[in-house]
Length: 151
Image (cartoon, rainbow, N blue to C red):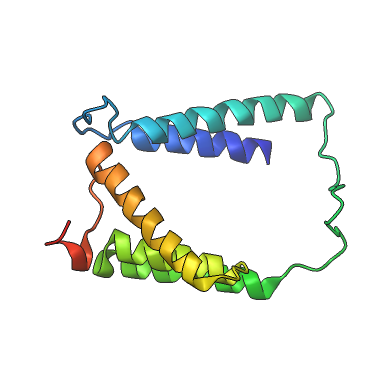
């Protein structure tokens, strides 16, 4: 697992090496966050590898409310996967804000949100804020979809 983390870090850094685009008003371009994540993955993987080579091993889960012997909740895993796949299929058609709101609302519902109206409002706010942060703040192009004339 340690080498997988190192490999992911290298993969992210190599993948972002050829990205060229203008920086935003804040001086951050589209490479900033992927490079930050790639370096973090690489460092964590190196330290993790060193720990394993020195004899370290993961400790079993010891939380109060976790039963390590309990079977996996495959029904929830399938539902979460379906929400992510639906988002991937709809993001170009509907746009980031609408598809993102559906993603956030779907995940909140699948994971047990009791107040659906509150979850829906938060989903719309989060998707809109994330769209504005990436498009206006970082200069990253996200699909506008159905709202292309509005935003």
